[in-house]
Image (cartoon, chains in turn yellow, purple):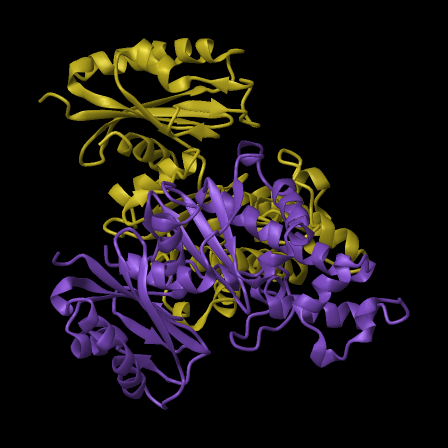
Length: 317
Length: 317
C-alpha cells in the first residue's frame, strides 16, 4: 500500500484546489481555499495545511504518498519557484516547492497550471496515449501546455509554453499585465472576447444588436454567446473574429511542433461551433499542405476542477 | 577503423552538396551536383553515385561508414520521403531514403535541410553543448530547426519546425508557393526584403532614395544593404521594418520553447546590426518579463556549404 497516492494542488488567481488522487486518476478527496486569503506565501501554506494535513492522515499518512504535484501561474519547473505572478498577491520570487516540501514532508514537483493540465490530459483525458499535442485553456486568460515526444516542454528556463502571449495582431490591443500589444490572450480569452464586443459596439454604433440591451458591466462572453444563439449578427461576428485570430495562432503552433491534436478547455469552449467553426477554418487556411486536415481539435472531457487537480497530481508519477 | 565515417548530403533547390565527414566534424572530401540535372529522382541518384561511389572507395569502402545523413526540403523524418517539394522538379512523394539506401548499401537518416543545419550547429557549431535552441536560416526562404532537450523536434508527422510559414501580418503579402498570406518568409527572407523595398519605393514615390538608381531587376537585399550603408534613409527603414517583423516572430518562438539561444545564418545575416538591432529590440519588446534579456542571438560560424554537409552527416551519429 505504500506510495500509492499523490496530492494535486492547483493554485489559481482566486481559488486553490487540491485533492488526493490514486494512480488510476480517481480523486478520493478534494477541497479548496482562497488563494489570497492571507498576505504572504507562508500564510497561504498554513491555511492549506489546516485542510490538507487531516486529509493526508485520513489516507494513511505521508508514508502512503509518493509526492505533491503543483500547478501554479508563473511556476518555474526547474527551481520550484513562482516568479512575478501578475495575478497573485505574492510579489517577487517565491520558493514555493521548498516551502511546501518542508511543511508536508513530501517531495514537490511544480510547473505552470496550463502545463499541469496538459499532463493531466495525457494521463487521464482525451490525449491519453498521444505523444505530440498541445492543450490550450480559453478562460479568463489563455494558457497552454506543449507535449512533444510524450514529454512536457519546459525549455531552458522552465517557462516554455507561454502561447497566450504571442503577438497575433501587430500593434493591436495593449495587454495590461504584460505590456505586450496584440497578444493572443488579448483576443481569444473570455476577457478578450468581451473587449471585442465593446469595440464592435462602439465601431458600429448605428447597428442594432441584442447586445445593446446590456450594460457594459453585464457584457460577458456568455452574454455574447446567448445573443449569437438568438441570431444576433454582431454577436456572431464577434465569434468569427475571435475564431479567425485563434485559428491563425493554432496554425502557428502546428507549424512549430507538428502536434497530432490540440486539446481545448476553459469557459470559451462552451460556445462550441460558434467559435470552433471559424477557428478550424482559419487554422486550415493558414497551414502548409503537409499539415492540412491532419490535426484534430479535441475538447477536454475532464471536469474543470478535476482536470486541474489531476494534472497537478500527475506530475509526481 | 570501422564505422568511423559518415556521409552528409544536402539537397538544395539548385545544388546538392555532399561530403565525407569524420566524427570530429572534419570534411575529408566534398563535391556537388546540380539537383535538377535529370528529370526524376532515379536520375538524380545516378548522377550522385557517379561522384560519391569513388569517394566512398577512396575512404575504405562502405564498411568504413556508419551511414548517410540527408537534409532535403520537405523531408519526412519518419518515412524518409520528400513530399511535394515546391522547389524541386520531383513531384509527389519520393521515397528518397529507401532509394539512396538501396544504391549505396548504407542506412539513411533524412530530415529537412533546416533541421539538419540545427543538428550541425549542435555538434560542431556555436550551439555546441546547448540543449534548447532554434536555428533560423534567413536566405532565399526562411527555414528553421528546433532543438528541445538536446533533440531535434520533428513532431507527429515528421514536419515540425516550419517556422518560416507562420503568419506574422494578418492579411499580408501572398506567398506564392504556399498560398498563405502574411507569413514570416514573405518578409524576413532575401526575397521578402526585396519585396519590401519595391513596396516602399512605390508607396513613397516622391521620396528620394539611392535605391531609385537601380532597375527593379537589379534590386536585391545586397543593393538595399549597400544603400543603407551609404546612409540612405529609405533603405534603413526597410531593414527596420524587416527586423520588427523578424523580432516579433522570434518572441513567438521564445514563448513557445524557451530556448537559451537563437542561431541565425543565411545571406540576410550579412547585414549585421542593420537588421539585428531592430530585430533584437522588437524581440525584447514583445517578451514576457521572465524571458527578457535572457535569450542569446548568435550567428553561425560554420561556412555555409560546410554547415549543410556537416549538419546532414551529424544525423547518423
